[in-house]
Length: 151
Image (cartoon, rainbow, N blue to C red; front, side, top):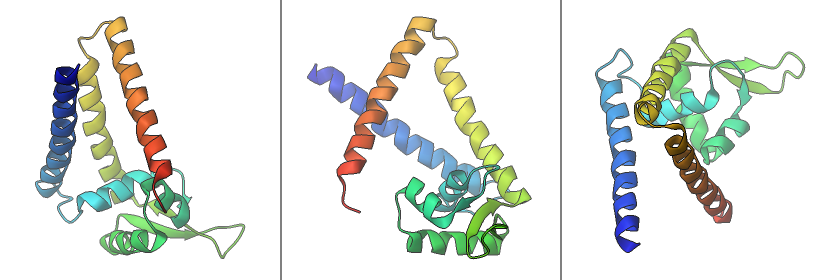
């Protein structure tokens, strides 16, 4: 069992590092070279169509509102994010992607979708169910671990 744990751990660490490296290099070689990985994840957390408050996005990313504000200020300046005042309560400011931000979001989403398609492409139903269960187990563990961390 220790051998299997080591093997799975090796793959998880390698996959995590490879995804980050590929995302970073892809950004640097694209028309979006002015965006950092941290900013890309902020764009991803804001999402394609729904507007979200700064607090909602910060919670989703697991960071403080102050930390998010620095990233959002940069993304607004670069033309990827807009701050939109709520129609019902002018005190509330929501974040939304600009046209350029939505284009970057779609390209990033395509990379993730292609990665998943490639992973499950030649799997049978049973194999993909086992993979799904393993991913759910990992996700559950990570969620429980996050809850135990101090704010």
